[in-house]
Image (cartoon, rainbow, N blue to C red; front, top):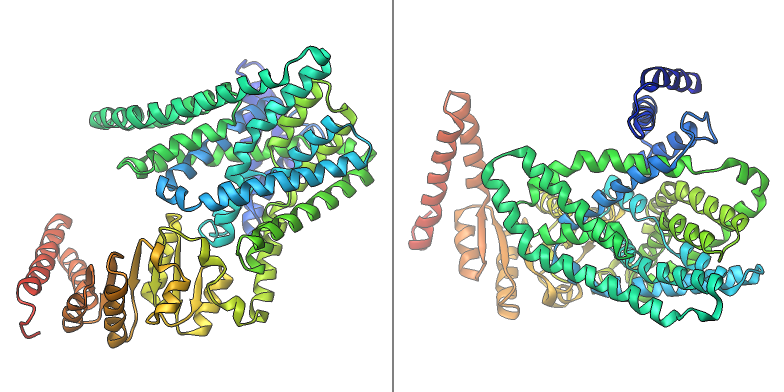
Length: 590
């Protein structure tokens, strides 16, 4: 493989040697290496993140040296993180973000403070100064938003409870970069200017700039972005629409970057502002290719930065630091998550997901080195430790999944109920019955990162779903106390998909009697059952047999030559007629 990559590198040198386009060679080498190596990782079903890190280590200055300088690749790769957070913002909403506030503000703040303080003490015990120890400790307390989020998406666990909690903590970590960079500036100014520097003035000015930047983005975005998208959409020019999406992500990223905030945070805010608009699906479709390629470039830049000469000269120190800080972070995060009411398994998986270092460690530590706060030799060891730990993240995530499958069956009844995981849910959907219909609804909700919890009386079905990280519990949805355990008072809707028609009707009546404001959507097996559910007070009822018949009719009509428009019109007419007829004549014989 190495010979093939070297040959490709020589070809690139020959073709691009006389062309003076910044970073053209690096981008071409990245694309060639990705095409040559990534299929192998796909073949072995390994994480694409791990594949990109391997490619970076292979083609970088410490590998076969096809790329001598990682700075250009890193600068372009940072845009991948920007677009990743932009798309995550699109997939969330203000309502869903508010439902996560306990974990973002509470658990996230606790994680940063506790892990940062513990790691600071670790470096102080090693003999470093208080400023250097503080910078290094809090830098390693942060995890990789890009790697962890991408892994959760790849594994289909972004909407699972460990994924939701991990992402909430990552959001707080991104916010924590602001005071951390302020801290670097203050320590650097003090190291260079001594006691003449007013630390409070520096901190106040930095926080003022950050607050103004966020306020400007939220205000301008709320009133300007939607109007701009409306104007561009009316032109029906897809290229112009794509240009506006790129501009929205990049401008907000630059604005927060100029204010000393994380660029990714600005892009996340822009996506959040657009999440509730009618343009969201098209924006997601347009951005996806840019996000995937540039994010791959970011992971490659991390691999390129792994200086194996530092690893060779400080092998024991790097290995010991990785072992100590990943184990310490995993235990502390698991303990904090458990203290916020989560189960042991959920807490353990969250701790393993966030145990490694993050990309912001490079930014923070580099600034501290430039300011004379952290010695260069120490910075090299800590940065390499963070980079290697990032490469271990896919393995740690896989270990968490494996532990869940092994330990899940050993938990007692106390772990099988919904007390822990459902306690923090808000604006979620409750699915009563997790058979074929319930699973389909749950899958669609997960794809949109919408929280849900399901109840089913089949123990094997609920156990299998929980091994996939889904909030599915063994329990009778018709019992009021069970509904209270899964947060019925905070739910945004209840979906009734029970196979037992009588049980479904009883459940709808019980919901209407005790929780009249919660919308209830139900599946009816036939028309008689449909009328019964409507009489019980269901918000909306879907006639299963009718919908199946209409879908089959549509296929038949198209097969015998009817156009899609004609078939759709006929189906819609029959659907409207049936539903309207039962609404005006509910006592008519079926």
